[in-house]
Length: 425
Image (cartoon, rainbow, N blue to C red; front, side, top):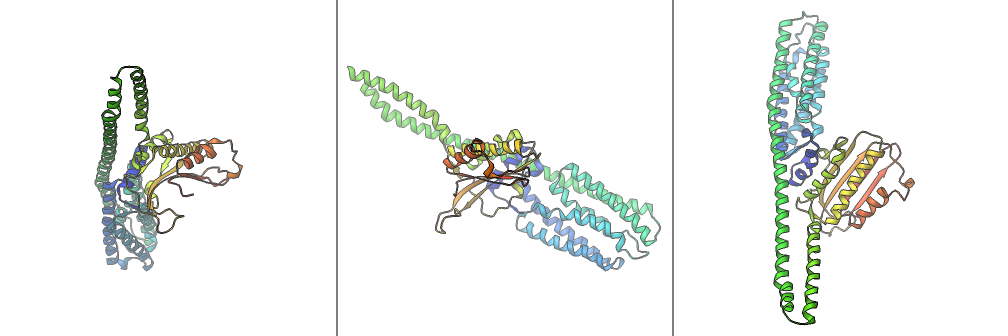
C-alpha cells in the first residue's frame, strides 16, 4: 500500500511520532530519502543481474528465475521511486529473495564448479528490507543471518560439487559480505536517522507554528471584540451613568450585569473556536496516550483512496471534543474487552464529495479515525442499551456533533470502530 508525500499526511503522522517508534514515522524528508533508496536499489539489483548473466554457464538454467524475479522487483522499485511513492510491502521481497537464492545456490552449481562468485553481493540487495523497515537490532540480525546463510551455502556447495573446501577463500568472501553490509548499514542508517531527526524537528516546528497562528487569531478576535464593546456599548453605558436619578442607578446595575456577561462570553470564546485537523490530531494523540504501549499506529500503510484534505481544514469545537472522546472510548473498550495485547489505530483525511450526494455536490474535507483489534468481538444486537460507552457516549455524541461512528464486530473476528467527521448517514 502506497504512501504519498503531502502536508496533511505529515501532520497525521504526528500520531506515530508521539508513540516514540521512529522507524514507523515517515516525514517528508525521510519519505524523499526512501524514494531515492528505491531507485538506488533498483540500479544495484540490475547490476547484480548483469553480473549473473555474465557467469551464466556456471550454474543450472533454472536458477535464472532468481534473476528474472530481481528484474521485476527492480522495475517496481524504479517505478515507485521515480513516481515519488513509497510502499513498505515492496521492501520485503529483497530479504526473502536473498534467503531463497542462498538456499538454492548449492543445488544450481554444476559438478566441479567453484561456488565463489557474485552470489555474495546478494546480501547487499537483501539489506534493503531492514534498512527501510526495521531498527538497528533488525539490521544486525539480518547481517548475521545473511553471513550464516552464505557460509552454509558455500559448505553445502563444496559437498555437492565434490570440490575441496577453501578456507582462506571462504573467509575472504565472507569478509566482503560482512564488511560491505556493515558499511552500507552504517552509512545509509546514519542518513536515515538524520532524516528522522529533521522530520521530527519539522513536525514540532510546524505544530508550534500552527499553535502560534491560532493564538494570534484568537488575540485578534478578542481585540476586535474588546474594541467593539469599548467604542459602542461601554461608551453608551458610561454616558448614561453620568446622569442623575433612578435611571442612572438602574443603568449602573445593568452595566455591571453586562460586564459579568461579557466576562463569561470571553471565557467561553477560547473553547468554542474551530480546531484545525492538525490540532485535532494532537488532541487524539494526547487522548490515547495512556494506551501507547498496546497501540500500533498504521498510518504509513493506509491506502489513500482519495486526495487528502487541506491541513488547515477546521472542525467545530463541539465536534472535535466528541471526536476525541469517541476515539478514546474505542481504544479504552478495546483494551478492556478485546482480550488481545494490541490495538491498531489509523488516522487519515480525505477531500471528496459525500458518498450519498450527487456529482454536482461540492467536495468536503473529511477526517476519519479507525480503531481495530483482532479480539473476541461481539454481536451488536446483544449490546445492552444501558452500555453508555457504545450506544450513547460514542454514537449519539458524534451524531449530535454532525459526525458518525460505525462499529463492525462479530464473535471471534475482532472489532472495528470508525469515527468520522462530518457524517454521511
